[in-house]
Length: 95
Image 1 (spheres, rainbow, N blue to C red):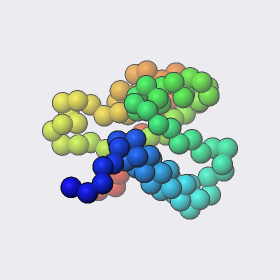
Image 2: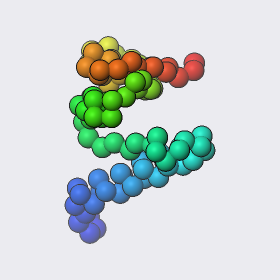
Image 3: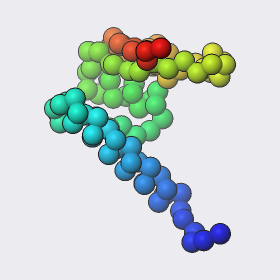
Image 4: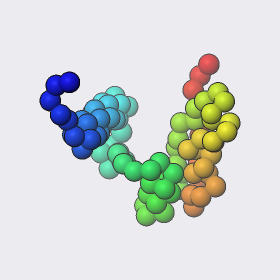
């Protein structure tokens, strides 16, 4: 089975990969460092807490509708929209 790997190591590597992708995307679109916020945690609670703490005016989120599961559970954007103290701009993918 090979060497044992801890969940912490795997989670750390996944976080590093995601953060690298985030930085490259922000660099591509020339987002100032002061406007980059890489958040980790349960999505709805983390976004709501962030919006309150930073007194955000508008939260921009992607909107993806998963076929059946999404209708049953609801999306993060749908959950956040009812809890944040600011406006939300939800952007759907093309197609």
